[in-house]
Image 1 (cartoon, one colour):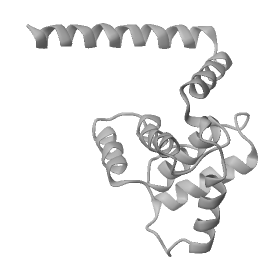
Image 2 (cartoon, rainbow, N blue to C red; image 1 turned 120 degrees about the vertical axis):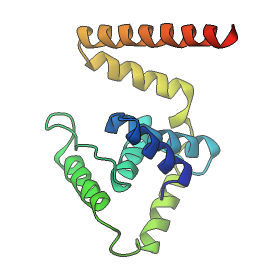
Image 3 (spheres, rainbow, N blue to C red; image 1 turned 90 degrees about the vertical axis):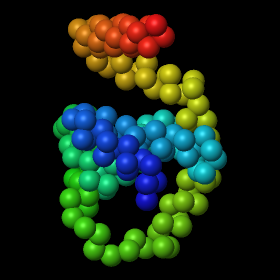
Length: 158
């Protein structure tokens, strides 16, 4: 179950008209925080991200399942199931035995999946898969955002 703060942040993002992936980012951030706190571990950054996205879908974020070539059939089916679960009210309480089993399995995993280096490697590998035009566009957008932020910070100071 996601924390109340996470749900509030995701709802605020939705109200502001931000994309579903931005809303889902709040759940992924929560998952990374849990790993860093030592609540549980993960085998890789990808697993931590997958858990966060699953939580987001179950919380009602309208996040579409991955495209056909991007993920396995099993992952896509699970994403569809999660979306369905998020669209309807909870029918019954989750199995406590199963919840406990998942938690204990994750507790046995390492904590380095949310380290700065691991996330940096993952970001780098993900960026490599995208085209150069897409990367360039993202870099330009980041530069514009930085310029806006520094301008507003200067205005606040004076």
